[in-house]
Length: 426
Figure 1 (cartoon, helix red, strand yellow):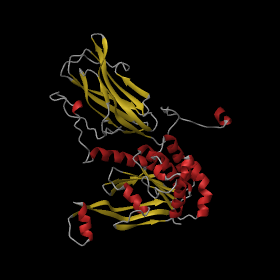
Figure 2: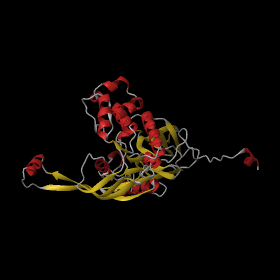
Figure 3: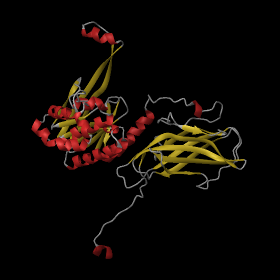
Figure 4: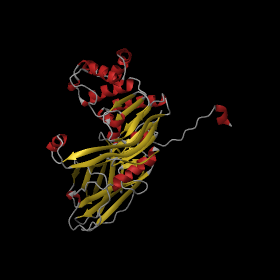
């Protein structure tokens, strides 16, 4: 075996886009029809060395899944070639390689045979596969009756327990529950220790940063850059900010006509369409955003880096005492941390009707890698009574990218030293 497990050379994939479904048939019959050529990949070149874990990231439509399908032989390239040195096992989109009418057990043998294993070799791996999948007697039922979670458990159990040289994974782990995902990532680490090769496509930047040795960034079918995870994740965040096809959000409930609120914040990430808001709106949160340590607007923050939360509040009435706040919760709704201007002893002057204030919270990200939810609030006192003027619960998500995690929600960033007792006494 060579030192290169996968070599991709001048790879292009073109799809024809037809104006009408019947045009495809007309063309097949030799008739001239108008078609638009769309290149999902355009002259892509890269190598994956044996024993590497390589991540591929990019926006939707960048060509990530197309690359994997060509590597695994599911799709043929328009131009270029792919050379694979080693036995490959793939976990692509849900259902790939499975017969819906067969039982789970029959599909284990079907998949193993497709990869190149004999019945005897599959027999020797069967107990490990069934233990890993942990779907009980459903293994004897047709897979068309499986939930998506059961399906991905079995598919991943087959892919990872038949001892391939190269493992290809495309987003499939996002279907499994958190405990199954943890088991899969432990298996990833076992693979890495064994010197196996992994190619991993995911939108989960935390997993990309934690498990990958190198990351390739695709954009509109082209490779923009490749290198160590932090550098490429940072570049990807810039692409998200600058992408031309970012949707414009009207958000009429957060903008007031003639409010004098000025320019909107740059916010390339979406507001939660199901945000819970309440309050009398005598003071109203009309805009918000987040920025990383370099001032780039994003809701993806590197662990241990400084970051900023901003919100803009417009006053529809005179208010004497105002409190600005934010809260961060986990995905189960547990409040993890947060603060407000009262806790921080930041004085806020009485506000007149028509005024607009920009509130900036600056802090260091010490939460563990994962997904969180941000809530914003503007409260205070009116006629001596505490009043919630405007609150936005779960207004957006926050992704914390980490290369290592500790126990619990919060990382104390401990520094550890280990020495023999004699050295410690000197």
